[in-house]
Image 1 (cartoon, rainbow, N blue to C red):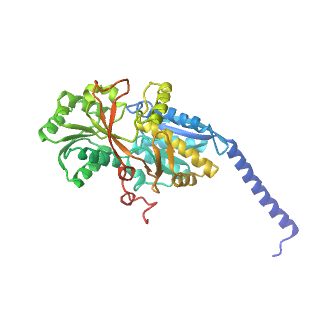
Image 2: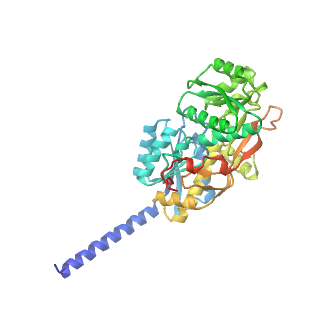
Length: 410
C-alpha cells in the first residue's frame, strides 16, 4: 500500500513526539541530583564498624570531588538494613524506584549484600561493597553492576595465614564461629596454611554470641599450636581475645584474629590486645595522605573515632564512582559506569594506585600489623605497627579460581 501524505505526516509527528519525549526525559534526568545511598547496620553490633562513619566517608568523598558529576549535584542518603536481607532489598527497591538513588555503597552482612546486588543488577544501577565480606561477590555471584572494594574472606584468610607463616607460625588451631561466614574464614586460612607446608592441629566451633570461651581456649592451649586463629567477628572477637589474654595465651602462642580492626581495640584495651597479628588494607597512620584524611574524619565523626578500612573503602569507592560517572556522562547506566570503573586505574589518598578486575574485585595490597603494647602507644588511636605487606596480585583470589560467570570463558 502506498502511504498517503496524511500517513507520512502522522508518522513524522509520532517520531518527533518520541524524540521530544526522549529529550525531555534526558533533560529531566540531567536536572535531578545523583544520589548515593549508604546502607549498613546503624543500630546493632556493627554500628561502630560501619554505620554513620561510612555515611560520613561518602559525604567527604562527594565534597572532595567538588559536589558534582556529569554536571549534576551529588547527594548522600543512608539507611539501616538491620542485618536483614529482606529489609535491605526493600530499601534498595524503594531507593531506586522512588528516590532516584543511583549507587548503593557499603553493605556489611554478606546475605544483605547478595540481596541488594540482585536488585541493583535488575535495575541497572551500581553497588560498591565495602563492608561486605563474602568472596562470592566476585565469584559465583559476581555481577556487571557490582564492585567489591575493601576486603573479602579469601583475602583475609589467605593473606593473614601467608604473612603469619612467613614469621614462623607453622602450626595452627582455629576457634571458629559456627556459621557460614566463620566456616569460610577457617577454610580460606586453612587452605593457605596447608599449601604453605604448615599444619592445622585442630579446630572448635563456637556459637554466635558465646560468652564463655574457656573450654575452647583450653583446647587451643593444649594443642601446642604456634598460632591460635580466631575465625570470629565483632563482639565475639572482643570476648575471645579478652579471655585469651586472661588465660595467658599471648605469652606462648600468637593470637591471630581473622576479622579485626581499629574499632576492636578500645573495647579490649591494649593490655589484652597487644601482640595480636592482623591483616588490613588501610590504617590511619600509614602516610601523610591517610593521616590528613583520617584526622579530618575524626573531627567530624559522631563518636570521634578514627576511620577503619571499611569506612575508608566507602570514601575511595565513591571517589572512583564519581570519576566514572563523569566519563560515561550519566548516572543511569550502571553497567556502563562499572565498565568505566574497571577501565580506569584507581588512585586515591587512602589506598593509593590500584585497579578493578573484570570480576569486580578491587585490587590493592594487604598489610600485616601487630597491636602495640601500652608502652609503645604514644597517643590515642596509636594502636598498630606495620610489619610487612602482601602485594595486590597475591592478596586476593586469582580470578581464574573464582568461577565468575563474567569471566568464565577467559
